[in-house]
Image (cartoon, rainbow, N blue to C red; front, side, top):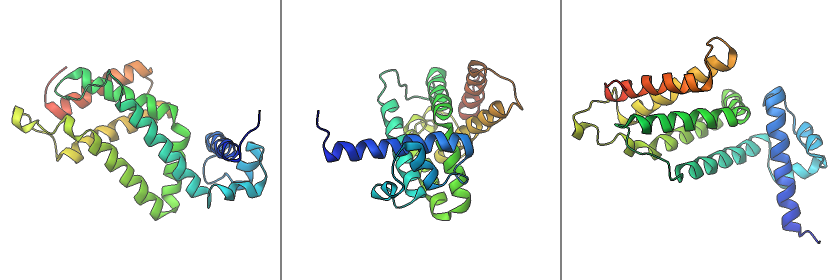
Length: 200
């Protein structure tokens, strides 16, 4: 079977991204060099620049992959979009927790890149704002239902994300001992009460 130039290029790009993910998990973004990535991918050093202008651009491509994965999850038929329903909050807490666990190396790499690149920090902030905007309709009608959010819609959803991120970090570093299910249950109750003022 003959492999086209386009297919070969796509294979190389994927190999570079896969190698980068593995190396970011092993040694972090800042300690990974482009030559490390090409060596791990089994590609010539110069091949990297046929696909990415630099390591940050590769990270941008990985961020685009994360956004696509998030879009796929939003299309899940089991997706619930009304945060007055505790099951909808649980669905989103579980989805975010699982997503962050699965993509931990890339998310950590993005945090490292944001520390040294103000431009990338703005990109990450914009990405987070877009993700929150995608679920803003889940709480937008709370005032009409007599429910008072703790802040603006965006701030309230940012608090939800911050709570999940913070707990995930503490579970990961061992400062809090919870199974994934225990963490998801606790976070669901915490977020639901914080958003609605109700028990679940």
